[in-house]
Image (tube, rainbow, N blue to C red; front, top):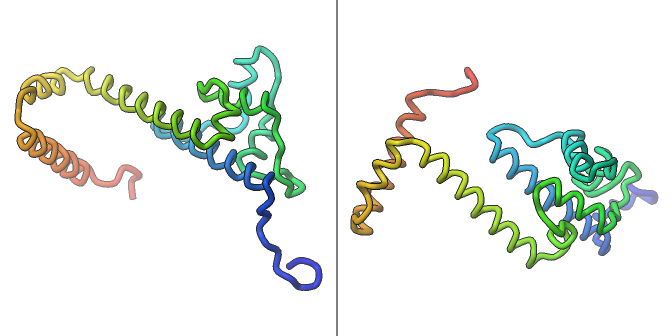
Length: 172
């Protein structure tokens, strides 16, 4: 509790709101990367190293990234990054004009939609690398919408059955 036994309220200042938006978007990018790689998100150190490698010299530290991700610094204050810092942070995820992504809701929605489309294309490319999937798609071509829905439902059910038959992966 704060002095005078009054509960502290969350900071709703414009800088705190902006810091939360940046933190949320960074969290989303880290989660996307973890999902894309099938592993864990890069550490703050790995991300800082990537950004510094792209820049050609040291421009960001792991502590800066951590503060942006947490939405506060060690003193509990909202970070106030420069446009250049946010641009470089975006570049670490392949996003040009990162400051706009982190600060503008409409631009973030557009970029997120583009990232979703790229992920779908990557998944499709992986699936097309399997000759049996390609053969199935060729056979399905020309089927009615109802038949295609049934085929998708059957594939979903078969996948679930195989995953259940395989049991837990973590050895539990």
